[in-house]
Image (cartoon, rainbow, N blue to C red; front, top):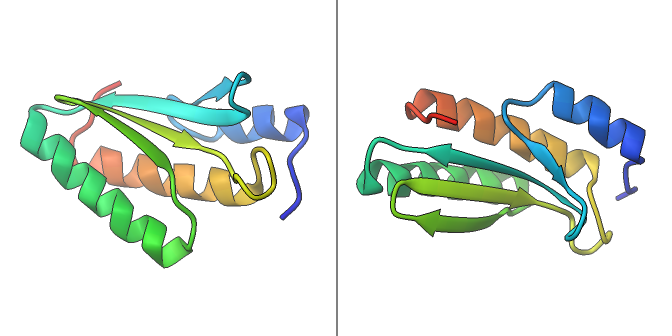
Length: 101
């Protein structure tokens, strides 16, 4: 997979909901707040299923009802189209689950 340029990443972020560039780890990141812990776990489970289907997996940090998703393609060393595609899918799932920024 080819790495995206900074301009391509910036363009891709404009199409996503609440994602931002994380330059330190060469990734993109989004944090959502769920109504409670269990709804956060259900969202993580939904994302896990979508990630398995895509063959591409986010790093996920769970802090009670705050879930942070980090997307990068480790094998490529940065952000690729696969990261933007899975980020868009996470946006859909988070919206369906009632996530807040």
